Length: 222
Ligand SMILES: C[S@@+](CC[C@H](N)C(=O)[O-])C[C@H]1O[C@@H](n2cnc3c(N)ncnc32)[C@H](O)[C@@H]1O
Image (cartoon, protein in one colour):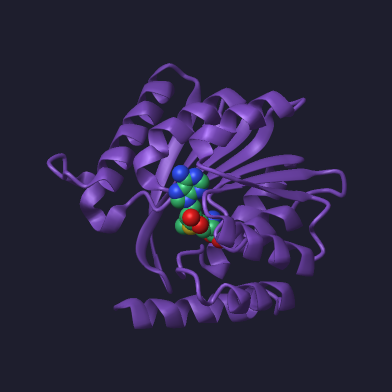
């Protein structure tokens, strides 16, 4: 089976499990000029389920794009919840804010513009309690830095999720000189260290679907 077949299976599940969602459909339309590298609707659904599972009230996202995963995550928040999403591109952030407002989530979601490694210290200074869930989905070469911040800013019992960890299978290649692969491998090594130190309980899943072959890393903060 190839991407076309995986897309068909994605559609089978989405048709049954993901109710028609006007705001998400409009968000994709509004972001059609941007790279189509948002999570699939089914993966967005998983993010929402996981956010509800940890009773998330505070969520941090690294990598907003046009707000697709942010809408999924924010929908899982209570009315007094908060999602801070970090985005490098002012244009992506502008479209994301419009999409978030159209979804009626503007009181829950704040999009901060800048390189995330530059804006994260300000986030750490601003919050009055650690995050329940951190979703890392930006430039992969900086994954080790994002994981470091996530380890500092996530509460025990919270979740750290890293998207796109498979890199088309190249993550298993120790000789790869691709910065995205190196960044992902270093991040996985850092997760392994935290697992050995009993700070994290972690796993990774390879996935197929409408977005092709990919994968996700999930870490529970002990
Ligand atoms: C894969 S997309 C995010 C997709 C989004 N999470 C979703 O599923 O809807 C990655 C985003 O990270 C942003 N990005 C890249 N480098 C960044 C950086 N250094 N700091 C913050 N955001 C960055 C890109 O501009 C892009 O919008």
